[in-house]
Image (tube, each protein chain N blue to C red):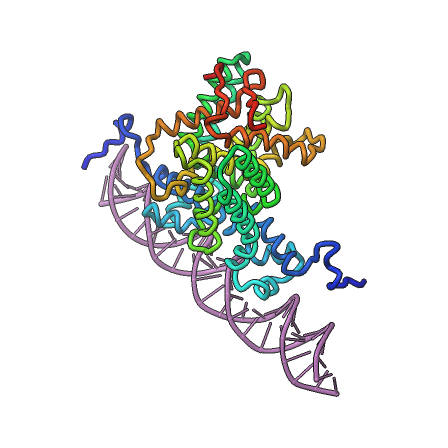
Length: 208
Length: 208
DNA sequence: ACGCTAGTTGTCCGATCGGTCAGCTTCTGC
DNA sequence: GCAGAAGCTGACCGATCGGACAACTAGCGT
């Protein structure tokens, strides 16, 4: 079998590092950082624990390598949003960027969202925490109401949960192959509803 | 100091079991079930590891004792909702019950929501998972759209995140003593917006 | 005074944790 | 041919894990 590394552009090159990163991500997201042992990660990926520690200096370094791409992406999104004056159009574009991010990095988001509080001190975690605060302020700083902060938190934590843990057992039997685009569209509707500014937010008159 | 056990009705009796349960809950919610060691739980509570294993047969038994009251409460709420024919009033009352539940058992909810997938097999976890499915079906079964399932998941996971992890670092400096009732009211508005049935759900015309 | 029970603890155990290190293979440049 | 780097591994280390067990103390009914 000839796997030419030079023509890696076609299909994504699957280096050992990448395999370990992916496996570690799945483990961190499902059993948590503390619960995921290096030996188990290595075993699932088909390597030895020593190999993991050859590619990554420590367990924390592995976590950083796993989360960094997602944080980088989120940072880009925030900077793009802050770079342009805020209009309804720019805010809507931000939401679309945000949904792209959530869907692409759902496992990374889930890992950070649910374990950031117990992993403070690790560089990438602190960096992500600061980023979330800046994001929150950018979205709902102008009036800074408690409700707006809750709306942002619900969108963030709700999406992380729904896409990773929620959909798994929400319909355990009834599984008629829900299409990704259908999930994406529905997610867009709900998140836009949550993050819409007060000016355009509809007020239900029944159900109050 | 006289602490009479017979007149325990006034202030909640603080038995050793209760102290250990509370400490364990805090640890499970913050560092996860796998990450929380019995020795550390005992240390924080001011007892020895042996004492923990005297009151609870095992670490899993401790988890069950910690989560069971919350699951019982949630079961009551579901049964109450299913017992009456569904009207807007009954659905609204359910939302209020639900919010009461979330606020009272936020740590238990957070623990279950974020770790259920890695703890399957433990009785109380499986029971809670089944309960969530039944809840989800009760709320949005009639039309069973993907969007409604996402709405339910966002409300559940979003609330669990916002109330435990989100509010902690969302406003790290600006902390003007946000009142509990203010949080409750805002949470009510957002959750009602998420869980309102299609018939009364407002459709924003801008921002689409 | 007595035995009984509930509560608490220190000690010990096998398993597993993250991490180090020496050695093994395979490939490459000279 | 061979030196050296890269990749990978098993053996080993001290620390910590969940848990078993015996011993100790304090209270209570007799």
